[in-house]
Image 1: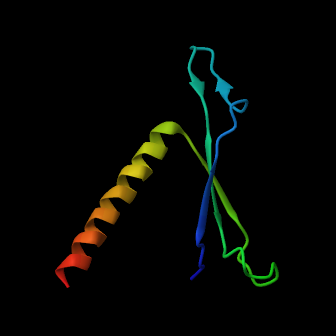
Image 2: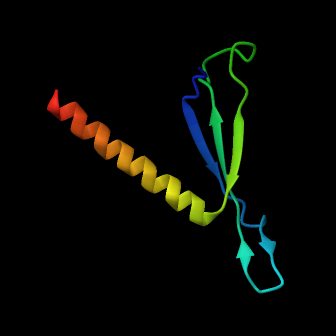
Length: 77
C-alpha cells in the first residue's frame, strides 16, 4: 500500500473552461505526495487528481464524516 502523507490543493484562477451555455467550470487540483523527507528514489510518485467544485464538496463532506466517526471511536475505547 502506498503511503501518501501530504495533500496539497492547487487552484489556478486562470484555468477554467467556458461552455456555450454560459457555465464556467473551474477544476481544483488535489495533489497527493509522499513524505518530503524521503529521498526521491524511495518516494512514491505524486498523484494529481482534478475535480470540479461539486465533487470537491462531496469529498470534503465524506472526509468530515469519516473524521467524525474516527473521533467517536477514539473516545469509546
